[in-house]
Each structure stands twice: as C-alpha cells, then as structure tokens.
Image 1 (cartoon, rainbow, N blue to C red):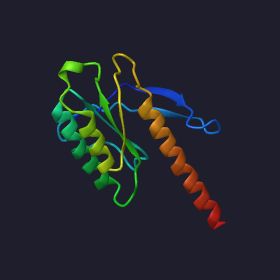
Image 2: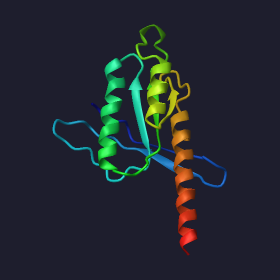
Image 3: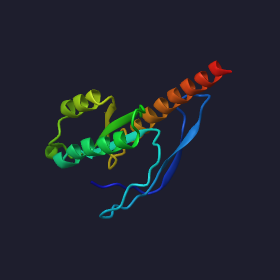
Image 4: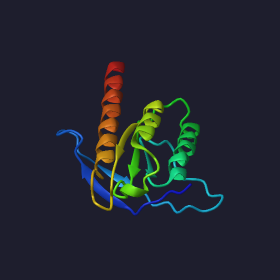
Length: 144
C-alpha cells in the first residue's frame, strides 16, 4: 500500500456561504512506519483503473480507517483514476461503484493526466464535510 501526493492547497466552495480550503499531505511510505493520522474527517481512496491490486488495496485502507475511527462515521469517496488509459482498464466502473456503495462511499472517476473530473472528489468531500459541520452546529445549539 502506498500513500502520498505533493502538498497543495485550493479553496473550494461547497456552498456560497461556506468557503474553506483543502490540503493534501505528503506521506512517504516506509516499511514499518505508521501513518500519522489522528481522527480523520473525510476519506479519499484513489485507485488506478488499470491495476486490480490498487483497487483491492482500498479494502485494506478502509479497514485501517475503521480501526482508527471506531464507531465514527467518516464520509468518503472512492476515486478511479487513469481513465484516459482506455485499453488498459481492468477494474470496471460498475464493480467499483458497487463496492463504494456497499461501503457507504461516493464514487467518481478521473483522469488527472487529461485534467478530467479531477476536482469532483474534492467537491464531494467538501459537501460531505459541510453537512457534518452543519449537523454538529445544530447539535451544539440544541444543547444550549
């Protein structure tokens, strides 16, 4: 299993009245190293549509998350990347979409190389996070 991306930041507007930014953290995989997360707020599982093993690894990552966040609902999205490699695809969209639904995740596909639909997962996560935020605010106000 691998983790990692370059650090980037971009402001996303899940709703006109709630702008906020999203960060991606670069974590280099090393043997025996634990992933430095505490309580995640959202989950983005990305797999390569041309690599069956990368898709299968999503289940392992989801298990790790559930072990870390016992009893907590974490909204997430499963992202199939490299859709530009038409002839090399081995993970069918229907299979991945069904897996995502079974595990309570949203689903989308992207081609980062062609810059197609690459913002979709971040908008999905931003909207999910905003909904959680609103629910927590309502709960807080109901206690007052």
